[in-house]
Image (cartoon, rainbow, N blue to C red; front, top):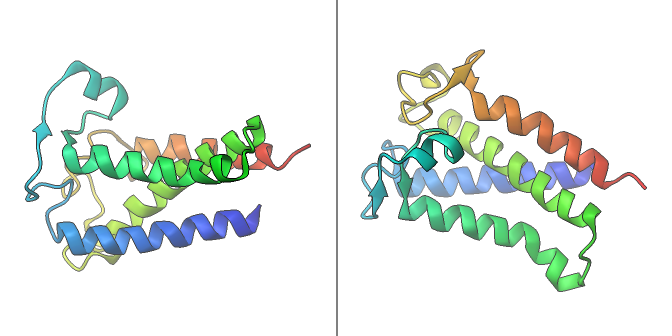
Length: 148
């Protein structure tokens, strides 16, 4: 389990560096030539109030497919394998997002705030609320996927 989590964290690091190279100082694809939906009730419920962009629609789909690839490759369509894929996806995105700020020369840890990361609409305890939801949920699903 720890090896899996470690590899997911490494993947998050690599993708964060890729996104920094793509987005630069303009987070949430603000300067990318992609479509954007800024306001919609579904974005408030399912996307944390953030804009939906073509870039993020494809990036999230790509990563979800990557984490599900082992299920299809091995034909292991078990609940444990699905839990592991979902957990990996959750932990990946929290790691990637946090490292995007920490490693981005335009931000750094000191600018990891609601003011500078304005696309994260809801914060609790100094971090986006999604971190507080998906980190423990991802860890619980990962742990459960290795039981029995």
